[in-house]
Image (cartoon, rainbow, N blue to C red):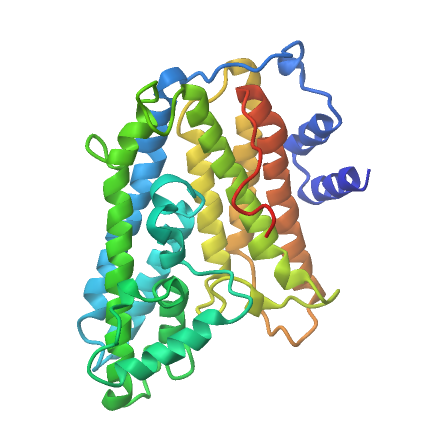
Length: 377
């Protein structure tokens, strides 16, 4: 009952027609178009669902990440020591582009992204024990000399990805501090160049794996069958996609939004949020939600009498992305009830989208979301 009251409150705030349908769905009452449909419906996309997901959402997302990562790498490798104002501005802009591109694809947490620790190599976060800070400090000491003892791509995942790069760029005496001398900048620039090179390399591997017609994993995803070592049926493709969407929404709700709200009824602990140093918390979360919205729209998943499910998920994700983009950050030591309310509202909208995915979309497609990578964390 408490959960239903939470949904009703979120609806009152947003004043959308979709909300009543979400509440009715939670109560077990389906809209008229869906009445009488006890069995799940096959995806309208049929055997094409894997190909449509790859061509319209997955491959473009990883190609975009690879391109933005290469752009950042090329820029950081030139002009870092001199670091004129234009260089500093473009570095921050390119870093933001990479963070958004990564966030838009990070929910695709299966296949190539989980192989070879690629996910952690790109984003070792959350990091409640501060492993990254300790290990990056050690890496910076090594960069004071000639070369690190171990190439960065073979080092701990904590020192390889975007959180490490953000720290090197945005810490008090980081690359984007234009008051540093050339001698102070030199080890930072060397490490930043290696970081961007490593990020671009991993992103390139992901793009290649998902690019049709030759990408190995893309071929498996679009052609399920008895000889396919990963996917035997189209239903397994649907299950993988819906599970990725559900897990992505859970990550935003439980890992990105919930921890900053814990421990106080008046404050937001923004330093527990992603990308707080660069001020990209809101844009990163918005990009994640936008990527998931594109994913759910890529194929025609449901027949006309059940289109309301996808339409509601799309609407909730669109509203959530808009809310995230406008999400303000503040000094976490200062009470800010209004900021806290904005964070809580975003969490409710994301929760609505996850409920629709798990309770309605999964049921309509006949798939079981089951356990995911976040369960037990």
